[in-house]
Length: 495
Image: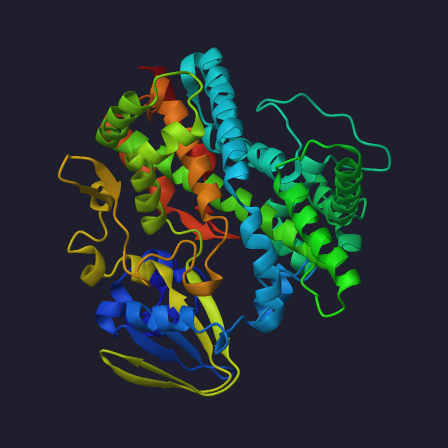
């Protein structure tokens, strides 16, 4: 909006200070200024990077380029965790957490995702002949319920009735998690005590209750998991139970050997469970939202993935181990959406001391106390990596064919594709998000198609343009998301 009222030369200086500018700019700054530039401010200086070599070097050198202090405070809302830590602390936590998100959890995620997707489409088809403005909200429900099941062992139907409150609680666990993710920035800025004041709107009071209740619920779940593990020979495979088992096992070893200290404290367990919640819910939910909306606007890509789904998925309940490895097009679709609608618009780091970056284009000296931002959207729009059609949605760019016409996913060079970051701090939940996404897409498009809901006086072309405008009207909150999801009005139909 500022660009409409300010002179061009003034706006050109201000644009890089506007939160979320990267989404709209894409590769414009790179073409105009170059692959890296220093934004000088009265406070700390900011280094902005779109060069893939520099980006890869920064993300590889985790001890030289550390987390911002703001990131530590913001993401440490409920305790220290693998995101907020650096150095030996990070290594200890990562060593415990990464193996926990394993194939047992992948199978659970697959089964829960297919069930939730089936329930959502059955509901849409039973109301208003498949026409709805609730698809994006429905996909968020899938994501939160998959997270509840795979993360905490809490299973709920997609369209659940009102759940009775547990004794001593003012909000259900699922409602609390939903409120926290939706109002995360407010939760960080405003104390829970203030948000709980009686005269505030219900949504804010619910957020205040969620801030009080999340640690309480988590402690209760930790206690239940420990009792279950002690009394039942049957192991549970959700993230919470597996993480508790791994951490408590290390704690027991420490008691026998004082040199070992690889376990997580109770505060770190709660902090990491909250990070798992944030990453597991918001990122996947919004990726699925952009995907469905894009497929409605470009139906030829529905044909493309349906061709694969029909070959691979031969039953109503496909087995994860058999189906997932063969659904390369569904995974390519996810990667292309993540390229154009990355969850985070930049990856931030800082320098505690002077650093030197050497690439094929030259040597760069980065002073101490510099904030470093890797422009995800700039990297994902770089024509050197993605070609002259870098701004165009084309999932086939991710597919290669072998000598027998077997399709497989192309692996891009390090530093060119960053939805899960890169280097040693790469997100450990990549596989889980991929499994959930592919399971939902395969389940939906095995039986259904989606198209824009054409309003009175609209043509189909106008309806598609409306959907594109809804997607363009996006901004980062915790992750990138549409400002008007209710305007993504879609019509579902059986194939």
